[in-house]
View 1 (cartoon, rainbow, N blue to C red):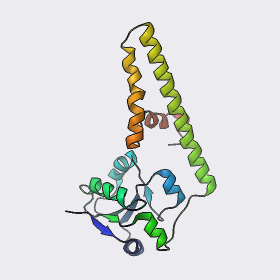
View 2: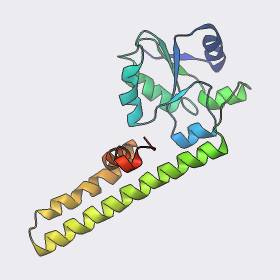
View 3: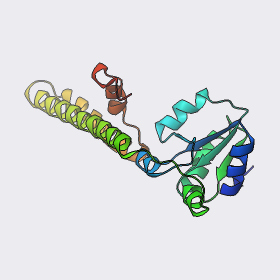
View 4: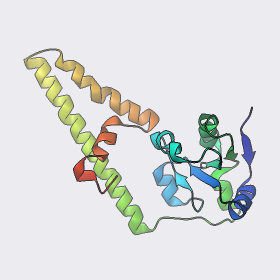
Length: 182
């Protein structure tokens, strides 16, 4: 059964008339900060799978992206758990073209988010470099099995690039010194 598509006008009416609707924006955090539908949750990448478990499966879930492509794929993934999932045709771009209200983060909040993302990215790169260098040194000087440890960042970084999920960043985000970023 195909995913139901709704227009941004229909979504706007649903938001004003219903309280059991959840809007999920699957764009990247940077795109989301530039402007999003009021009340939308930004669940991108691994956040989508981990955070939807807390949502009411009987509610209507409207999924939006920039133009409708990524949201259609997210709807396919959510359809089993949320029979009322709908794709917002045209995405945020259509919402803006229709002249509907858009929320944007303040510049100050955006700078805080960007600096925390940059801090985690720097930490991830630093740990990956130390792990790689240490494993290579140990592999050349003691036991060649250490070369397998060097494969961890070699697989983790492309995984991050392809899926948006980096296991090392996931662990670092939960480290005590990053508790304000979580």
